[in-house]
Length: 217
View 1 (tube, one colour):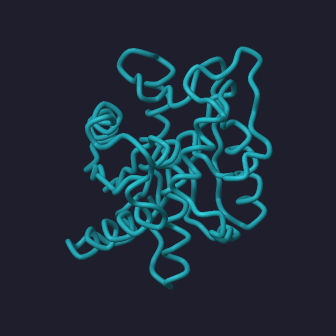
View 2 (tube, one colour):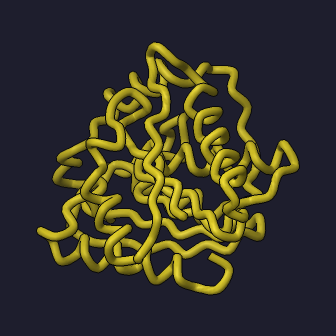
């Protein structure tokens, strides 16, 4: 079972906007996918989305899935939400999911080291991201070191959030997390959403499926 948390800067999106990527993963991975329609800012600020993701994970366990049968994944803000949910499980002393899958996750809300591709990012702009985070996440939210499930992270080398993925992977590895970081050149933020139209997207989602089929996932 893949619990999928959509992106959209915690402000927009839902299962309907990510139907294609979820359907591709379900079809090619022969997976069950639960696409969560979590609460969005500005009406619902942190930790509303995290609490919804946690409740969904617990609901899957109540339905009979074991933690070893559940993977939490998402893109962009949903990738961040996957990480935050895993950290919350650790804080509560609850069992971790089998693995995490993060596609171009945002991991640094200070935006101190955003990548600046020479041609710019066609989908993301720094000002928009900063405004979205200000609407969702209060300034006093604490930061914690990772203690996470095995993690697959994919990122494009020419997108604004490249350094988020690189720095997070480095810190997670230093903390003992098993991390697989995959970098894809000359594409764009969440290129995986174009699976079926773009060979690189098909390949990347195929890598996700292979990761989910590995022992322990």
